[in-house]
Image 1: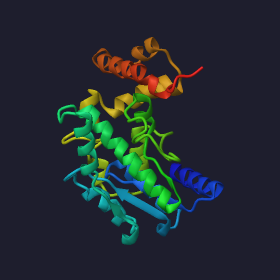
Image 2: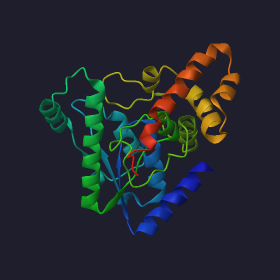
Image 3: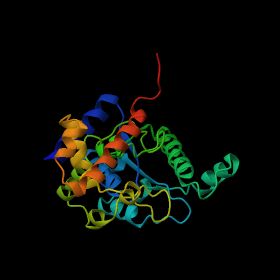
Length: 249
């Protein structure tokens, strides 16, 4: 089972680093829910320090639900609203409310600073929640949500993370809800992309794992699908710089 391999990886990593505690930011989405679940199986619960970082009135119901599901101690949970910091930065940097990308990046990087500072206070490793689909689609903020000490899911595509959630028997809400980075109201990954994770994962598997050319990949899809496939391939190419920076001699 996939979960056993990841649990073993987590246990070996904490043992090798000499760290006992783990800090993880929990948003209520499927990726953080699965990462937390694997952590709950790998470490004693009193060594896990989940932190919830809402912006203003952002709903944390599902985040709390996964903490309750694994019966993590109330004394280990931390909720810190990042609104005052983000709003102050937006004002100082003159970021308008309708500039959602800049504001979203500030939110992601504020969360990163908070999570790493919290981990320092607990002598802990930061456990990330990035998956392979987000990685190759460039759907992450550098020095933001992509920052971590270890990544239990980055070798899995989004559809595989969903399968893992089923294997772990997580509550149905985590399987049903639309994927979202939670950076602005009603934000949806797939609406923003203009294509589904199911299709993207097929394309990424051909491109990344099987190393097929773009022409070969397009031939594998129907004419109705090819526009979306081209959009996926174009996004991967345009976002590839994120995996190469910083450029250096």
